[in-house]
Length: 335
Image (cartoon, rainbow, N blue to C red; front, side, top):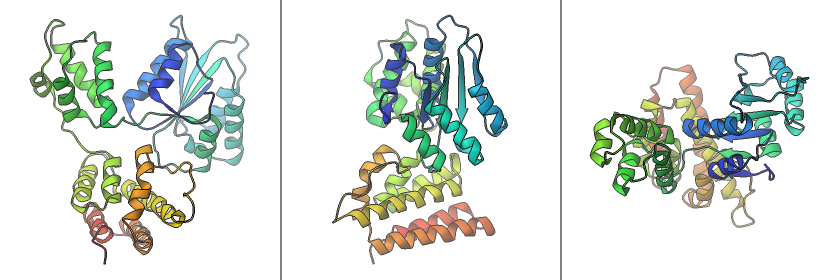
Protein backbone atom coordinates (compact mmCIF):
# COMPACT_ATOMS: atom_id res chain seq x y z
CA UNK A 1 0.00 0.00 0.00
CA UNK A 2 1.30 3.40 -0.91
CA UNK A 3 -0.21 5.07 2.17
CA UNK A 4 0.07 3.76 5.75
CA UNK A 5 -3.64 4.00 6.30
CA UNK A 6 -6.92 2.14 6.24
CA UNK A 7 -7.97 0.85 2.83
CA UNK A 8 -11.45 -0.39 2.05
CA UNK A 9 -11.66 -3.97 0.84
CA UNK A 10 -13.30 -3.05 -2.48
CA UNK A 11 -10.45 -0.69 -3.36
CA UNK A 12 -7.87 -3.26 -2.29
CA UNK A 13 -9.41 -5.94 -4.52
CA UNK A 14 -9.52 -3.55 -7.49
CA UNK A 15 -5.82 -2.79 -6.98
CA UNK A 16 -4.92 -6.49 -6.87
CA UNK A 17 -7.01 -7.21 -9.98
CA UNK A 18 -5.10 -4.42 -11.74
CA UNK A 19 -1.86 -6.29 -11.04
CA UNK A 20 -0.66 -4.21 -8.09
CA UNK A 21 0.28 -6.81 -5.49
CA UNK A 22 2.17 -5.66 -2.41
CA UNK A 23 4.65 -7.89 -0.54
CA UNK A 24 2.80 -7.38 2.77
CA UNK A 25 -0.89 -6.89 3.58
CA UNK A 26 -2.70 -6.54 6.88
CA UNK A 27 -6.35 -7.62 7.06
CA UNK A 28 -8.21 -6.23 10.08
CA UNK A 29 -11.63 -7.67 10.88
CA UNK A 30 -13.41 -10.98 11.12
CA UNK A 31 -15.66 -11.43 8.09
CA UNK A 32 -14.57 -14.79 6.69
CA UNK A 33 -16.00 -14.08 3.24
CA UNK A 34 -13.94 -10.91 2.79
CA UNK A 35 -10.85 -12.66 4.11
CA UNK A 36 -11.22 -15.58 1.71
CA UNK A 37 -12.15 -13.33 -1.21
CA UNK A 38 -9.08 -11.16 -0.81
CA UNK A 39 -6.72 -14.11 -0.42
CA UNK A 40 -8.22 -15.76 -3.52
CA UNK A 41 -7.69 -12.58 -5.55
CA UNK A 42 -4.06 -12.36 -4.39
CA UNK A 43 -3.53 -16.03 -5.30
CA UNK A 44 -4.91 -15.45 -8.79
CA UNK A 45 -2.78 -12.37 -9.39
CA UNK A 46 0.41 -13.59 -7.70
CA UNK A 47 0.38 -17.01 -9.36
CA UNK A 48 -0.92 -16.38 -12.90
CA UNK A 49 0.05 -19.89 -14.04
CA UNK A 50 -2.17 -21.42 -11.37
CA UNK A 51 0.60 -23.19 -9.43
CA UNK A 52 -0.13 -21.73 -6.00
CA UNK A 53 2.49 -22.06 -3.25
CA UNK A 54 0.72 -21.01 -0.07
CA UNK A 55 1.67 -21.68 3.55
CA UNK A 56 -0.19 -20.93 6.77
CA UNK A 57 1.95 -19.49 9.57
CA UNK A 58 0.21 -20.08 12.90
CA UNK A 59 2.07 -18.96 16.06
CA UNK A 60 0.20 -21.53 18.16
CA UNK A 61 1.41 -24.37 15.92
CA UNK A 62 4.88 -23.27 14.76
CA UNK A 63 7.89 -22.08 16.69
CA UNK A 64 8.38 -18.34 16.32
CA UNK A 65 11.89 -18.90 14.98
CA UNK A 66 10.51 -21.21 12.27
CA UNK A 67 8.06 -18.53 11.14
CA UNK A 68 10.87 -15.99 10.84
CA UNK A 69 13.09 -18.52 9.04
CA UNK A 70 10.40 -19.25 6.46
CA UNK A 71 9.88 -15.56 5.76
CA UNK A 72 13.54 -14.65 5.51
CA UNK A 73 14.89 -17.75 3.74
CA UNK A 74 16.45 -16.98 0.38
CA UNK A 75 15.13 -19.06 -2.51
CA UNK A 76 17.88 -19.60 -5.06
CA UNK A 77 15.27 -20.15 -7.78
CA UNK A 78 13.32 -17.00 -6.83
CA UNK A 79 10.04 -18.91 -6.83
CA UNK A 80 7.03 -17.04 -5.54
CA UNK A 81 5.53 -17.91 -2.16
CA UNK A 82 2.38 -16.73 -0.38
CA UNK A 83 2.28 -16.78 3.41
CA UNK A 84 -0.77 -16.20 5.60
CA UNK A 85 -0.05 -15.30 9.23
CA UNK A 86 -2.99 -15.23 11.61
CA UNK A 87 -2.92 -13.43 15.00
CA UNK A 88 0.59 -11.92 14.95
CA UNK A 89 0.21 -11.00 18.64
CA UNK A 90 0.96 -14.68 19.25
CA UNK A 91 4.59 -14.00 18.36
CA UNK A 92 6.54 -13.91 21.62
CA UNK A 93 9.98 -12.63 22.52
CA UNK A 94 11.62 -9.27 21.95
CA UNK A 95 14.09 -10.62 19.38
CA UNK A 96 11.41 -12.43 17.37
CA UNK A 97 9.17 -9.35 17.29
CA UNK A 98 12.05 -7.15 16.18
CA UNK A 99 12.97 -9.59 13.40
CA UNK A 100 9.34 -9.76 12.25
CA UNK A 101 9.00 -5.97 12.14
CA UNK A 102 12.30 -5.74 10.29
CA UNK A 103 10.94 -8.17 7.70
CA UNK A 104 7.70 -6.30 7.04
CA UNK A 105 9.70 -3.07 6.70
CA UNK A 106 12.01 -4.74 4.14
CA UNK A 107 10.08 -7.71 2.69
CA UNK A 108 11.27 -9.99 -0.09
CA UNK A 109 9.45 -9.07 -3.29
CA UNK A 110 9.13 -12.68 -4.50
CA UNK A 111 7.06 -13.39 -1.40
CA UNK A 112 3.66 -12.09 -0.34
CA UNK A 113 2.72 -12.05 3.34
CA UNK A 114 -0.91 -11.58 4.40
CA UNK A 115 -1.28 -10.81 8.11
CA UNK A 116 -4.74 -11.37 9.61
CA UNK A 117 -5.82 -9.56 12.79
CA UNK A 118 -9.42 -10.53 13.52
CA UNK A 119 -9.79 -8.51 16.74
CA UNK A 120 -10.26 -4.74 16.47
CA UNK A 121 -9.61 -4.42 20.20
CA UNK A 122 -6.09 -5.87 19.97
CA UNK A 123 -3.95 -2.99 21.21
CA UNK A 124 -0.71 -4.89 21.64
CA UNK A 125 2.44 -2.95 20.82
CA UNK A 126 3.33 -5.38 18.02
CA UNK A 127 -0.03 -5.03 16.29
CA UNK A 128 0.14 -1.23 16.53
CA UNK A 129 3.62 -1.20 14.96
CA UNK A 130 2.49 -3.56 12.21
CA UNK A 131 -0.40 -1.28 11.27
CA UNK A 132 1.75 1.85 11.52
CA UNK A 133 4.24 0.24 9.15
CA UNK A 134 1.93 -1.33 6.57
CA UNK A 135 -1.51 0.17 7.06
CA UNK A 136 -4.50 -2.17 6.97
CA UNK A 137 -7.44 -3.34 4.91
CA UNK A 138 -10.78 -3.31 6.70
CA UNK A 139 -12.46 -6.73 6.41
CA UNK A 140 -15.14 -6.16 9.01
CA UNK A 141 -18.68 -6.94 7.87
CA UNK A 142 -19.95 -3.85 6.01
CA UNK A 143 -22.78 -1.87 7.50
CA UNK A 144 -26.26 -2.31 6.08
CA UNK A 145 -25.92 0.64 3.72
CA UNK A 146 -23.16 -1.19 1.83
CA UNK A 147 -24.44 -4.75 2.14
CA UNK A 148 -26.77 -4.44 -0.84
CA UNK A 149 -23.96 -3.87 -3.33
CA UNK A 150 -22.11 -6.89 -1.92
CA UNK A 151 -25.22 -9.07 -2.27
CA UNK A 152 -25.60 -8.08 -5.92
CA UNK A 153 -21.88 -8.69 -6.47
CA UNK A 154 -22.17 -12.24 -5.07
CA UNK A 155 -25.15 -12.98 -7.29
CA UNK A 156 -23.27 -11.68 -10.35
CA UNK A 157 -20.44 -14.10 -9.55
CA UNK A 158 -23.06 -16.86 -9.76
CA UNK A 159 -24.21 -15.58 -13.14
CA UNK A 160 -27.38 -14.03 -11.70
CA UNK A 161 -28.05 -10.47 -12.77
CA UNK A 162 -31.85 -10.34 -12.45
CA UNK A 163 -32.06 -10.01 -8.65
CA UNK A 164 -34.86 -7.83 -7.31
CA UNK A 165 -34.47 -5.42 -4.37
CA UNK A 166 -36.92 -7.58 -2.40
CA UNK A 167 -34.59 -10.57 -2.68
CA UNK A 168 -31.66 -8.46 -1.55
CA UNK A 169 -33.63 -7.18 1.44
CA UNK A 170 -34.72 -10.70 2.37
CA UNK A 171 -31.11 -11.90 2.41
CA UNK A 172 -30.01 -8.98 4.57
CA UNK A 173 -32.91 -9.63 6.93
CA UNK A 174 -32.08 -13.29 7.55
CA UNK A 175 -28.30 -13.35 7.17
CA UNK A 176 -27.07 -9.76 7.28
CA UNK A 177 -24.83 -10.22 10.29
CA UNK A 178 -21.96 -11.25 7.99
CA UNK A 179 -21.13 -11.57 4.30
CA UNK A 180 -20.05 -15.13 5.00
CA UNK A 181 -23.61 -16.06 6.01
CA UNK A 182 -25.09 -14.18 3.06
CA UNK A 183 -22.74 -16.04 0.71
CA UNK A 184 -23.85 -19.38 2.17
CA UNK A 185 -27.51 -18.52 1.59
CA UNK A 186 -26.81 -17.45 -1.99
CA UNK A 187 -24.90 -20.69 -2.60
CA UNK A 188 -27.86 -22.75 -1.37
CA UNK A 189 -30.44 -20.94 -3.47
CA UNK A 190 -28.35 -20.89 -6.64
CA UNK A 191 -27.46 -24.56 -6.27
CA UNK A 192 -31.05 -25.71 -5.87
CA UNK A 193 -32.82 -23.47 -8.38
CA UNK A 194 -32.30 -23.76 -12.14
CA UNK A 195 -30.36 -21.00 -13.85
CA UNK A 196 -33.43 -19.71 -15.67
CA UNK A 197 -35.63 -19.71 -12.55
CA UNK A 198 -36.52 -16.33 -11.10
CA UNK A 199 -35.34 -16.07 -7.48
CA UNK A 200 -37.97 -14.69 -5.11
CA UNK A 201 -37.94 -13.65 -1.44
CA UNK A 202 -39.96 -16.81 -0.69
CA UNK A 203 -37.09 -18.88 -2.09
CA UNK A 204 -34.69 -17.12 0.26
CA UNK A 205 -36.86 -17.79 3.30
CA UNK A 206 -37.59 -21.37 2.21
CA UNK A 207 -33.97 -22.45 1.84
CA UNK A 208 -32.61 -20.49 4.78
CA UNK A 209 -31.87 -22.23 8.05
CA UNK A 210 -30.13 -19.17 9.44
CA UNK A 211 -31.57 -17.04 12.22
CA UNK A 212 -30.15 -13.56 12.15
CA UNK A 213 -28.19 -12.49 15.18
CA UNK A 214 -26.58 -9.30 16.42
CA UNK A 215 -22.99 -8.08 16.14
CA UNK A 216 -20.72 -6.66 18.81
CA UNK A 217 -20.73 -3.15 17.26
CA UNK A 218 -24.52 -3.06 17.69
CA UNK A 219 -24.10 -3.96 21.37
CA UNK A 220 -21.48 -1.25 21.95
CA UNK A 221 -23.59 1.30 20.07
CA UNK A 222 -26.59 0.55 22.30
CA UNK A 223 -24.39 0.90 25.40
CA UNK A 224 -22.88 4.14 24.12
CA UNK A 225 -26.38 5.51 23.52
CA UNK A 226 -27.51 4.35 27.00
CA UNK A 227 -30.28 2.22 25.52
CA UNK A 228 -30.73 -0.23 28.39
CA UNK A 229 -33.36 -2.56 26.93
CA UNK A 230 -31.54 -2.92 23.61
CA UNK A 231 -28.17 -3.42 25.36
CA UNK A 232 -29.59 -6.25 27.47
CA UNK A 233 -31.27 -7.88 24.47
CA UNK A 234 -28.20 -7.75 22.23
CA UNK A 235 -25.78 -8.62 25.04
CA UNK A 236 -27.72 -11.79 25.93
CA UNK A 237 -27.95 -12.73 22.23
CA UNK A 238 -24.17 -12.41 21.84
CA UNK A 239 -23.55 -14.50 24.96
CA UNK A 240 -25.86 -17.21 23.61
CA UNK A 241 -24.28 -17.29 20.15
CA UNK A 242 -20.81 -15.92 19.61
CA UNK A 243 -19.24 -14.12 22.57
CA UNK A 244 -17.89 -14.93 26.01
CA UNK A 245 -18.44 -12.68 29.01
CA UNK A 246 -14.71 -11.95 29.05
CA UNK A 247 -14.83 -10.69 25.45
CA UNK A 248 -17.79 -8.44 26.22
CA UNK A 249 -16.19 -7.08 29.40
CA UNK A 250 -12.99 -6.28 27.49
CA UNK A 251 -14.96 -4.61 24.69
CA UNK A 252 -16.94 -2.55 27.21
CA UNK A 253 -13.77 -1.49 29.03
CA UNK A 254 -12.28 -0.38 25.72
CA UNK A 255 -15.44 1.56 24.85
CA UNK A 256 -15.64 3.42 28.16
CA UNK A 257 -11.91 4.13 28.10
CA UNK A 258 -12.31 5.82 24.72
CA UNK A 259 -15.41 7.69 25.94
CA UNK A 260 -13.35 8.92 28.89
CA UNK A 261 -10.62 10.16 26.53
CA UNK A 262 -13.31 12.06 24.62
CA UNK A 263 -14.65 13.52 27.85
CA UNK A 264 -11.21 14.67 28.97
CA UNK A 265 -10.47 16.19 25.56
CA UNK A 266 -13.81 17.98 25.11
CA UNK A 267 -13.89 21.71 25.67
CA UNK A 268 -10.16 22.16 25.12
CA UNK A 269 -9.11 20.40 21.96
CA UNK A 270 -10.17 17.40 19.98
CA UNK A 271 -9.35 14.07 21.55
CA UNK A 272 -6.27 12.45 20.08
CA UNK A 273 -6.91 10.72 16.81
CA UNK A 274 -5.53 7.33 15.98
CA UNK A 275 -6.15 3.66 16.58
CA UNK A 276 -8.76 3.11 19.28
CA UNK A 277 -9.53 -0.58 18.83
CA UNK A 278 -13.12 0.30 17.91
CA UNK A 279 -14.76 0.02 14.51
CA UNK A 280 -14.80 3.17 12.35
CA UNK A 281 -18.54 3.70 12.93
CA UNK A 282 -18.07 3.60 16.70
CA UNK A 283 -15.12 6.00 16.51
CA UNK A 284 -17.35 8.53 14.76
CA UNK A 285 -19.95 8.23 17.51
CA UNK A 286 -17.56 8.66 20.46
CA UNK A 287 -18.24 12.41 20.83
CA UNK A 288 -21.98 11.67 20.87
CA UNK A 289 -21.49 8.90 23.45
CA UNK A 290 -19.37 11.19 25.65
CA UNK A 291 -22.21 13.72 25.85
CA UNK A 292 -24.46 11.08 27.36
CA UNK A 293 -22.22 10.22 30.32
CA UNK A 294 -20.77 12.27 33.16
CA UNK A 295 -17.09 11.76 33.85
CA UNK A 296 -17.76 10.23 37.27
CA UNK A 297 -20.16 7.73 35.65
CA UNK A 298 -17.55 6.68 33.12
CA UNK A 299 -14.91 6.18 35.81
CA UNK A 300 -17.41 4.25 37.94
CA UNK A 301 -18.24 1.99 34.99
CA UNK A 302 -14.57 1.24 34.36
CA UNK A 303 -14.07 0.30 38.02
CA UNK A 304 -17.19 -1.87 37.93
CA UNK A 305 -15.92 -3.69 34.84
CA UNK A 306 -12.69 -4.42 36.68
CA UNK A 307 -14.65 -5.86 39.60
CA UNK A 308 -16.80 -7.98 37.28
CA UNK A 309 -13.73 -9.28 35.47
CA UNK A 310 -12.29 -10.47 38.78
CA UNK A 311 -15.66 -11.87 39.88
CA UNK A 312 -16.20 -14.03 36.80
CA UNK A 313 -12.69 -15.46 37.18
CA UNK A 314 -12.99 -16.31 40.87
CA UNK A 315 -16.69 -17.17 41.45
CA UNK A 316 -19.45 -19.16 39.78
CA UNK A 317 -21.66 -16.16 38.99
CA UNK A 318 -23.52 -16.66 35.71
CA UNK A 319 -22.42 -14.68 32.64
CA UNK A 320 -25.95 -13.38 32.02
CA UNK A 321 -26.30 -12.14 35.60
CA UNK A 322 -22.90 -10.42 35.58
CA UNK A 323 -23.63 -8.63 32.29
CA UNK A 324 -27.17 -7.64 33.24
CA UNK A 325 -26.04 -6.27 36.62
CA UNK A 326 -23.41 -4.13 34.93
CA UNK A 327 -25.79 -2.79 32.29
CA UNK A 328 -28.48 -1.86 34.82
CA UNK A 329 -25.90 0.00 36.91
CA UNK A 330 -23.97 1.62 34.07
CA UNK A 331 -26.88 2.69 31.88
CA UNK A 332 -29.34 3.76 34.54
CA UNK A 333 -30.76 7.24 34.22
CA UNK A 334 -28.58 10.06 35.50
CA UNK A 335 -28.72 10.35 39.28
